[in-house]
Length: 176
Image 1 (tube, rainbow, N blue to C red):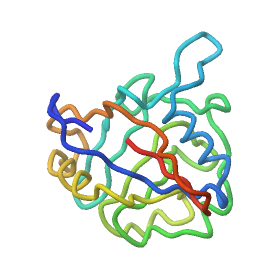
Image 2 (image 1 turned 60 degrees about the horizontal axis):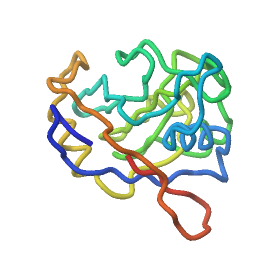
Image 3 (image 1 turned 90 degrees about the horizontal axis):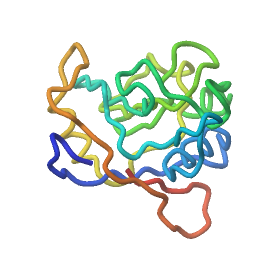
Image 4 (image 1 turned 30 degrees about the horizontal axis):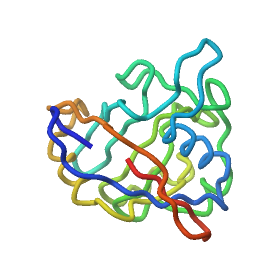
């Protein structure tokens, strides 16, 4: 992660692959950047930004098409349906929760957000598919560049991302 070209650290996210496999596959594929749009455009988080940062709420990123929060797409096409486990099984009980950003029911694409506090009003509205397991200090640092309007005061960029090789378990890890 970088802010205005200066490296600020990394964030490692544990993913709930067994509970929400379709959402996790979408995220992991975009982290790897190994798929393309039918028109040939690479679908990848690497090089994209966190375009929305609201202190005491969340950081939002994943719009690699328009880079302003109006775009993005999933590996399944433009949008894909909510996975029920991600809506009902997990809750936005703490900072560090990873959820899909959406514009309503069944409108998941590539945009995601990381909470910076408990956000229970988002429960059953946004699919939860992971949580930060390392790098909350980086999340907190990025949060300092936010404001109530959401427009960050610096360019917050995902410079590199990839999948960490971990032992088999109920979740996998993605790094950004």
